[in-house]
Length: 145
Image 1 (spheres, rainbow, N blue to C red):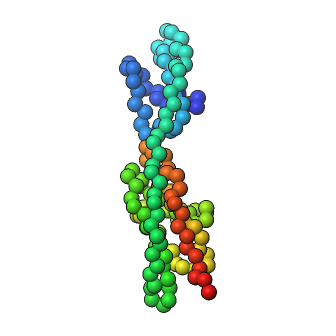
Image 2: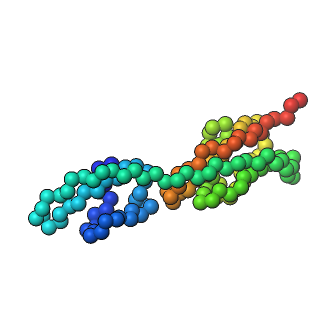
C-alpha cells in the first residue's frame, strides 16, 4: 500500500514483492495480507519501508561558445557532459525554464532576452532516478560599451 492505495492486487505466497518502476515512487510502503477466500481477517499493516530513488549527478556547464552565422545572427551554445542515466535536460535562464534537451547542448540566438544566468537540471523520465540539483550557472551578458 502506498498513501492508502493498493498497488499490488495479485495473490502472492512469497516474502518479497517487486514493485515495477512504473508504479513505484518515493515514499513509504506497507503491506497488508488479505484473505481473498474470506475465511480469515486481513492482517495488520506491516511496518513501513521508505523507498528513495537515487539522485542524478548535477551537470557541469562549460563556458558558452559564440558563433556568428550569416546575416549577423549570433548563436550562443551552452554545453555540458552527459550525465549517466539522464535521458533529458531542462534548461533555465535566470530561474525560468526555457527548454528541454535530449542532447548535451542548448543553442539560443544572442539578444537582450537571452542574457542572464543559465543552469541545467538532468532528468530521468523512467523514474528510476530523481532529477539532479541545478548545475553551476554560466552567464551570458550584453557586451559592455
